[in-house]
Amino acid sequence: MDNSYTKSAKYYDIIYQNKAPEMYEGTIKDFLKLSDEILGGKPEKVLDLGCGTGIHAINLTKKGIKVTGIDSSSEQLSIANNSAKKENLEIQFIEADMVSKLAVEEKFDAGAAFFSGFCYLLDDQQVINFLNNMREVIKDGGFLYFEFWNILA
Image (tube, one colour):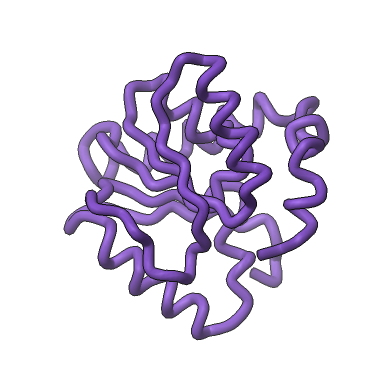
Protein backbone atom coordinates (compact mmCIF):
# COMPACT_ATOMS: atom_id res chain seq x y z
CA MET A 1 0.00 0.00 0.00
CA ASP A 2 1.12 3.52 -0.72
CA ASN A 3 1.62 4.99 2.76
CA SER A 4 0.94 8.52 1.48
CA TYR A 5 -2.79 7.73 1.26
CA THR A 6 -2.80 6.58 4.86
CA LYS A 7 -1.12 9.78 5.97
CA SER A 8 -3.23 12.09 3.79
CA ALA A 9 -6.63 10.37 4.02
CA LYS A 10 -8.28 13.15 5.99
CA TYR A 11 -7.04 15.74 3.47
CA TYR A 12 -7.83 13.85 0.26
CA ASP A 13 -11.29 15.33 -0.35
CA ILE A 14 -10.10 18.81 0.64
CA ILE A 15 -7.34 18.62 -1.99
CA TYR A 16 -9.88 17.79 -4.71
CA GLN A 17 -12.80 19.93 -3.51
CA ASN A 18 -12.40 22.75 -6.05
CA LYS A 19 -12.11 20.48 -9.09
CA ALA A 20 -13.84 17.42 -7.77
CA PRO A 21 -17.46 18.02 -8.77
CA GLU A 22 -16.63 18.33 -12.47
CA MET A 23 -14.01 15.59 -12.31
CA TYR A 24 -16.28 13.10 -10.58
CA GLU A 25 -19.30 13.97 -12.72
CA GLY A 26 -17.23 13.68 -15.90
CA THR A 27 -15.78 10.30 -15.06
CA ILE A 28 -19.16 8.91 -14.04
CA LYS A 29 -20.73 10.26 -17.23
CA ASP A 30 -17.99 8.56 -19.30
CA PHE A 31 -18.36 5.33 -17.33
CA LEU A 32 -22.13 5.25 -17.81
CA LYS A 33 -21.80 6.04 -21.51
CA LEU A 34 -19.45 3.08 -21.92
CA SER A 35 -21.81 0.91 -19.89
CA ASP A 36 -24.68 1.88 -22.17
CA GLU A 37 -22.62 0.89 -25.21
CA ILE A 38 -21.48 -2.44 -23.74
CA LEU A 39 -24.36 -3.50 -21.50
CA GLY A 40 -27.21 -1.63 -23.14
CA GLY A 41 -27.86 0.40 -20.00
CA LYS A 42 -26.43 1.14 -16.60
CA PRO A 43 -24.83 -1.72 -14.67
CA GLU A 44 -26.61 -3.25 -11.71
CA LYS A 45 -23.42 -4.01 -9.73
CA VAL A 46 -20.08 -2.21 -9.91
CA LEU A 47 -16.77 -2.93 -8.22
CA ASP A 48 -15.04 0.41 -7.49
CA LEU A 49 -11.32 -0.44 -7.51
CA GLY A 50 -9.19 1.84 -5.34
CA CYS A 51 -12.32 3.61 -4.13
CA GLY A 52 -10.49 5.91 -1.73
CA THR A 53 -12.91 8.11 0.21
CA GLY A 54 -15.87 6.66 -1.68
CA ILE A 55 -17.06 9.63 -3.75
CA HIS A 56 -17.45 7.64 -6.97
CA ALA A 57 -19.16 4.83 -5.08
CA ILE A 58 -21.57 7.29 -3.45
CA ASN A 59 -22.39 9.01 -6.74
CA LEU A 60 -22.99 5.68 -8.51
CA THR A 61 -25.15 4.42 -5.65
CA LYS A 62 -27.28 7.57 -5.89
CA LYS A 63 -27.94 6.55 -9.50
CA GLY A 64 -29.41 3.24 -8.34
CA ILE A 65 -26.32 1.10 -8.85
CA LYS A 66 -25.16 -1.37 -6.20
CA VAL A 67 -21.49 -0.61 -5.53
CA THR A 68 -18.78 -2.45 -3.64
CA GLY A 69 -15.64 -0.40 -3.08
CA ILE A 70 -12.18 -1.75 -2.36
CA ASP A 71 -9.15 0.15 -1.21
CA SER A 72 -5.97 -0.72 0.68
CA SER A 73 -6.20 2.35 2.95
CA SER A 74 -8.27 1.67 6.07
CA GLU A 75 -8.20 5.40 6.80
CA GLN A 76 -9.76 6.28 3.45
CA LEU A 77 -12.31 3.49 3.85
CA SER A 78 -13.29 4.88 7.23
CA ILE A 79 -14.04 8.23 5.58
CA ALA A 80 -15.94 6.44 2.80
CA ASN A 81 -18.07 4.53 5.31
CA ASN A 82 -18.85 7.69 7.28
CA SER A 83 -19.76 9.60 4.11
CA ALA A 84 -22.08 6.83 2.92
CA LYS A 85 -23.77 6.67 6.34
CA LYS A 86 -24.33 10.45 6.32
CA GLU A 87 -26.12 10.04 2.97
CA ASN A 88 -28.09 7.00 4.25
CA LEU A 89 -26.58 4.85 1.51
CA GLU A 90 -25.73 1.17 1.78
CA ILE A 91 -22.33 0.60 0.22
CA GLN A 92 -20.00 -2.24 1.05
CA PHE A 93 -16.39 -1.13 1.46
CA ILE A 94 -13.66 -3.76 1.71
CA GLU A 95 -10.04 -3.29 2.71
CA ALA A 96 -8.13 -5.02 -0.08
CA ASP A 97 -5.74 -4.30 -2.89
CA MET A 98 -6.31 -4.90 -6.59
CA VAL A 99 -3.65 -7.59 -7.00
CA SER A 100 -4.70 -10.00 -4.24
CA LYS A 101 -7.56 -12.45 -4.71
CA LEU A 102 -10.76 -10.67 -3.73
CA ALA A 103 -12.95 -12.25 -1.10
CA VAL A 104 -16.30 -11.44 -2.68
CA GLU A 105 -19.15 -13.86 -3.27
CA GLU A 106 -20.88 -12.00 -6.06
CA LYS A 107 -20.06 -11.14 -9.64
CA PHE A 108 -20.14 -7.60 -10.98
CA ASP A 109 -21.32 -6.14 -14.28
CA ALA A 110 -18.32 -3.83 -14.30
CA GLY A 111 -15.15 -2.91 -12.47
CA ALA A 112 -13.92 0.67 -12.45
CA ALA A 113 -10.46 2.02 -11.64
CA PHE A 114 -11.33 5.71 -11.50
CA PHE A 115 -8.78 8.50 -11.11
CA SER A 116 -5.89 6.48 -12.52
CA GLY A 117 -6.09 3.74 -9.87
CA PHE A 118 -4.81 1.16 -12.36
CA CYS A 119 -1.55 3.12 -12.64
CA TYR A 120 -0.58 2.04 -9.11
CA LEU A 121 0.14 -1.42 -10.49
CA LEU A 122 3.88 -1.21 -10.93
CA ASP A 123 4.98 -4.35 -12.72
CA ASP A 124 3.76 -6.97 -15.15
CA GLN A 125 3.00 -9.54 -12.45
CA GLN A 126 0.73 -7.11 -10.59
CA VAL A 127 -1.14 -6.40 -13.82
CA ILE A 128 -1.48 -10.13 -14.55
CA ASN A 129 -2.75 -10.80 -11.00
CA PHE A 130 -5.19 -7.91 -11.28
CA LEU A 131 -6.58 -9.11 -14.62
CA ASN A 132 -6.90 -12.68 -13.34
CA ASN A 133 -8.77 -11.38 -10.28
CA MET A 134 -11.10 -9.36 -12.47
CA ARG A 135 -11.79 -12.40 -14.63
CA GLU A 136 -13.08 -14.11 -11.49
CA VAL A 137 -15.37 -11.29 -10.31
CA ILE A 138 -16.64 -9.63 -13.50
CA LYS A 139 -19.58 -11.33 -15.20
CA ASP A 140 -19.22 -12.65 -18.74
CA GLY A 141 -20.08 -9.75 -21.01
CA GLY A 142 -19.11 -7.23 -18.34
CA PHE A 143 -16.28 -4.73 -18.62
CA LEU A 144 -13.42 -2.94 -16.88
CA TYR A 145 -13.14 0.84 -16.98
CA PHE A 146 -9.74 2.51 -16.59
CA GLU A 147 -8.68 6.14 -16.42
CA PHE A 148 -5.09 7.05 -17.16
CA TRP A 149 -3.79 10.42 -15.97
CA ASN A 150 -0.13 9.71 -16.57
CA ILE A 151 1.49 9.34 -19.99
CA LEU A 152 3.90 6.79 -18.49
CA ALA A 153 0.96 4.55 -17.54
